Image (cartoon, rainbow, N blue to C red; front, side, top):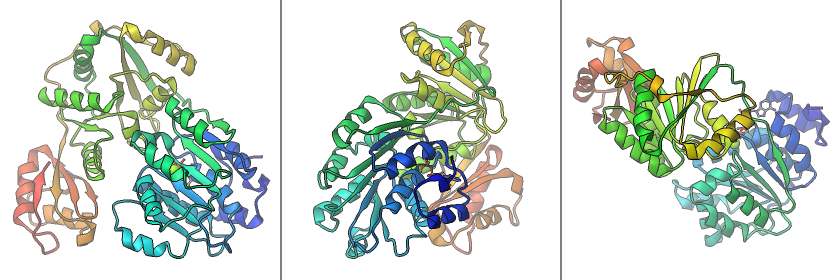
Length: 457
Ligand code: ADP
Ligand code: MG
């Protein structure tokens, strides 16, 4: 039943899926593709990695008329990163439909070449709302004959402030279009927009309760004014090597990061106000172990794949039990033991009850008096990050940086940590104790025969 051959799609499609190792449908695909093929609007809840792209792509490609040089489908994504992923996946899925033209339109790249590429109307457009709207206003894109609209990761788009742009884009599309909405969460705002842009949508959601066995989950009752003191006690009691602390609002993230910094903790905050470069940098610092604490909102943490996370701490409980489960599912992965610690005030008892109901297992409470914090546990991260003003565009590879640091120097390869290369910037983690030396080596020396600016971040 869950094989692709059970769907009313051509054998070529099924064969192509096989070459991509798509043998069985994922749960979200199993529930949504038949509805999509039947022409229904859907509102589907599914998290990252659940196979959403194929869930909408198969429907779009199945009804595509390649002889019709008009834009027939539009997929709106929150970020360029995600839009690129979707385009790539759609191209692979589109192999059986010869001459399918798929164009990606996102900000951050010049608009003129995009406009030129739109002269041969693409069948399918993938992009971010801001740039799509710009093309509509310039007249370089026309959605008058659109038959399928997809909002991918809709909650994140709303959180990024794209609602107005999205509405204006939708105003240029035909009313009888098919609208497919995907979102990891269903806040009221999503339900509201669904009512205004969809036609009797079929609601689809996929169970996301994970196997909890590897996660030790403990709840601590606090007074409102003791929230940060208790958090610090938790950090100094458990001293996790790496932890993600969840807050509900970005302002709270920023304030908490400042407070922890002032107390000597190395914490980075991930929230919606960061640009891509800042976001990359914070993630690099966390993943290369030069920061042991990542403070994040749910939206900012979406799609993050963090390995070896020792603890998830809920500084504030999510009002939605499902989000709570998503949060704590980031620890205890791949057979590792994980810890999920949550703070709640008496006024939030109903949230705790909702979580208990949702997870269908009793909550473990502990008293804050059972904590034995030790103030010298400042959780000093083992590494520091050096930032080099050169990257992929300068043809710099990880081996070049490693070589510059260790060839004819006193540094050993094992003192050098993760190396991350971006277009015009690179980061290298080095052990705390050798930071100064490493900085001097890179600043005084050359990488691939050229001098670059290097600093510690
Ligand atoms: P999402 O958009 O939900 O985050 P994607 O559509 O990007 O997820 O899919 C995640 C990964 O799973 C991709 O690498 C994709 O190729 C793969 N995938 C999707 N569906 C299947 C399937 N039915 N069988 C095998 N792999 C799949
Ligand atoms: Mg996706």
